[in-house]
Length: 270
Ligand SMILES: [Fe+2]
Ligand SMILES: [Fe+2]
Image 1 (cartoon, protein in one colour):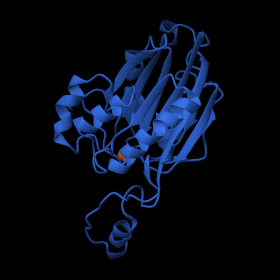
Image 2 (image 1 turned 60 degrees about the vertical axis):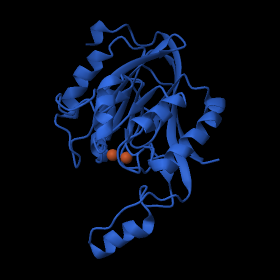
Image 3 (image 1 turned 180 degrees about the vertical axis):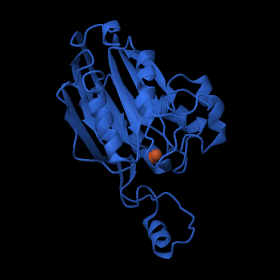
């Protein structure tokens, strides 16, 4: 497929802000409060946000998605909680710029790839799900080839690999090195310290973290999470409101499908 692409390295300057899993109302408010500051600081060409936990910690509603798009977000990606809220199903089919993992079954609502353009530069976005410890109907490492063909013409490509296992994310980063601008990991809600540009020019990080309460246990009120771990009994989980932060990365690129840098963004709600 390399032959069918315009050569990497052609001029195509872009700055991509990618924001990790927005958790509940507190996560949405944190996103909305931080975005103007981040726009001022980085002047991103594109903003991509993982919204799989936007509705009370599980899934996303059309209202949540409309609110995120209204804040100027270009693309929303999702993950294993995509289908928690039924009202999102028709929205996923009707809106190009909200993605569920491309390697879900074709029969499931929605789609996993889109291309957006700003300032004369185009960005393809692919949402993928890992196959270890999370459900996805088809294998990520083979489905990515068809996903990349769908955004072949894009100047830049960002892949959100929503996965539990670090090995799958590291493996996908190496597998796509030199073919896409960035591979960013989501799902664990905990940022990793391994952000770097791989030798072939792909920006990579195993997990960008979440946009939500650091005072909880990956988003859940900590006393409820701990009770469940201590008693081994079912406990009703609510989203923590304590110590909200936005977590993400900024990827800068000056040439086609090649990142110059990846910078972690870890910002308390103003
Ligand atoms: Fe998540
Ligand atoms: Fe997830």
